[in-house]
Length: 244
Image (cartoon, rainbow, N blue to C red):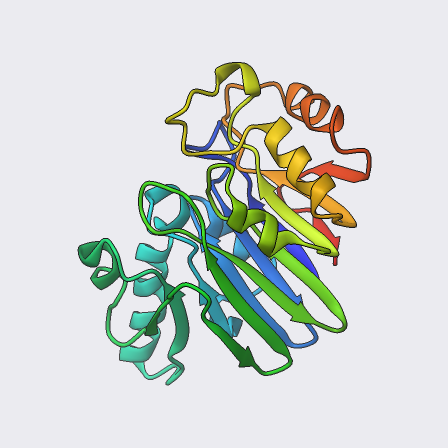
């Protein structure tokens, strides 16, 4: 398996950047994980949106789904024109209801609601979800294939679920939305230090941090996480591909 970072920012992109979006590939299977603003353009630098097999949205905040709301037009128009009959399975939380319902256009997607502990097999991949701690339902996910385990945190506070999900991951793509100095009790994101602690306790083999606030210096994020995580650590770089 390999994962390409289409966008790494949140809750908005910096100049020339993009919000959360990741393309996972395993053999011929292509899975789009989150689809924040700017990611559809980036995706098409790699592959056609018609080549997607599956789409997963961790939660329905705009910085994770906004380009899904135009991807539905791209796909729906191809259906109308008769260019394709393909309907792409899309998994997302069912709440907020109005945001879930807005995802559909001309049967572009085959919509499925994610529930806590949902697990299914898609072709050569086993995909599972676990509810995180965020203001709206957000699901971290694991994808197991080719003898490897990939885990994506989605957005979350420091909670037991993220430890359980990330245990022994070969590659852990983890949000680090704030620095420890800026974190307060109500902050709905992990600090870089917290992400590092999770990686250490969960014994992940490689950690890639993502979901950066554009005002931060990336070195500060890396250095904070590195104080507590001594393993293989990188910052997600847009359009870079990581092997799981």
